[in-house]
Image (cartoon, rainbow, N blue to C red):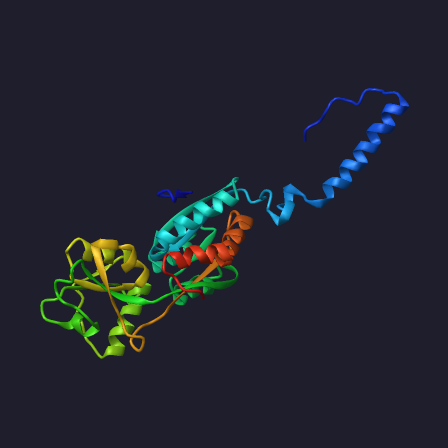
Length: 281
């Protein structure tokens, strides 16, 4: 796995042999062929007890993914490459809105995984997706606060308290849209101190002490570890984020791209996502 950059064998003739020897060799070849019919390593068919033997997926697959997927996709890429030794996954993380714009402008992506449906639709509507996007994960929202919660924020209303520095992301960024929906449901008007590029930048603002709180994905609050704390948002105010994934129309490695999407929806891929706090689609 690597991060995205800033940008016929022939043998010697069979020598003449005595008829008896030839007959024995022919018999051995027939028996060998029959024994080999049980599996075909070149196609990844099952070997003894259904264990896969090898993969035909080769080359690099470039994945453009929402910033909130960073930890899960890094682990998934390692597992994918272990199962496909001749393949390599290149990961490019950013806000879904930025990634959608890059793909529509011709960026060389094989797969797009968005944190919302709206930005995926932008790429679909531009004719840059092959087939139909597939939902592969969900995520809830939490309020992220500094470690120790010095401003004693215990609910959404706490974000509107005097002296609380609240940060979010621009409306076109999924987490910015989701956060605005939560505040609207709560009937609150909160003026952000700043609009961050993506959810990771938002988390950094809080963990560095430059902001007191923000609304993020629950997975990001968890990933912050001891540097921050997560405050639950009640179900009636929360918003569930749905993550779609799709192969791009101009994918340079269509087979590997399709294999990556299939891996995400497989039991192994779903287990990795669940380990990082994502829900099933």
